[in-house]
Image (cartoon, rainbow, N blue to C red; front, top):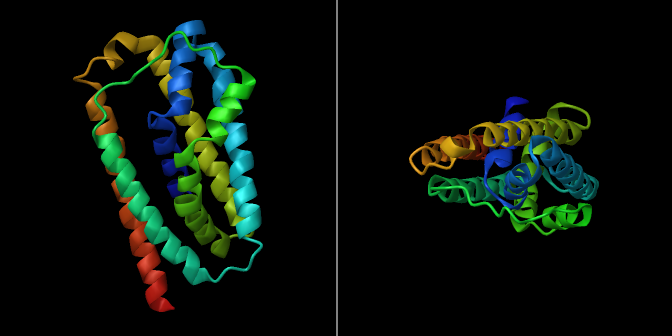
Amino acid sequence: MILTPVGLGIVGGSIPGPILTSVFTEVLAGGFKKSLRIIFIAMLTESVLAFGIFAVIFNLNIPAEFFYLLSLAGSAVLVWLASQVWRIKKIENNQKSIFTLNKIILITVFNGPLWIFWLTVGVPQAFLLTEKYTFGYLIFLFFFQLGWLLANLFWAFVFARFRPLLTKEKFVPYVFKFFALLLIVFAIKATYSSLNMLFVF
């Protein structure tokens, strides 16, 4: 069960989006060390948002069936994300961007896919852990963010060291096709678990 949040975090941290693009931009502008500021501020902001979502939802005594149905929706989201990731051909970067604390927080808070992910994928997966462990949603959040952090640190380092290679169109698609397949695996697993639990009920 722990491998799921870590794996989701790694995939989530590897998908090009506002944060990863900002990290790459900062690597170009000031080097690897300066990109760490974006990574940690974004992770802290997302953690606060996710904890707020968990704190509200897990204190409303919502029936378990709701989360299993929500998980099915989350599986559809993962498949949709996989289709987007599969088509990635190159990584775009804006070398002139300078990201302040406020900008990083705003980029994270107003990241639509982030909210969609936590409500449709994060909550149901966290619920499954909560059924097995006390405060399982905190365990899910911790290991997800661990995977997310490792992915962002890895890609920032790789981009800083091997930028000429990574920006070649022949190499980049294969990297993200791998992550797309991982998303499909997580979607199948979530669908199977949800249907199994719904059938039991």
